Image (cartoon, rainbow, N blue to C red; front, side, top):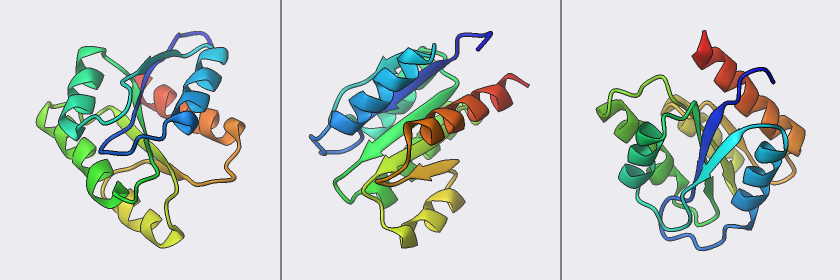
Length: 134
């Protein structure tokens, strides 16, 4: 990776389980990304504000609580309000297959469910970062 891309990993809502988000954050760091981790129980507005303030290329969201249909699109909306349409959003967690199309239609670039490999996730972040750079 020639340029050090900046990404933000966030846990929107009341979900208190952050092991997966931390695994992704560490894997991205190990591959040369600069990672900002917002911690658990953040609002969509807090996540979007941090993404804009930190000038990140991609936001990664994690949800295990079942609130992904409301929270993930809310982050996209908050980024749009901040005129940060160019920051891609990817999501992962325990997300039913039938919700993936709805999330993508709401502006989530990629959705990762249990069983996704770290290589797949890192590749999606890399691709989104490179696309933003163009």
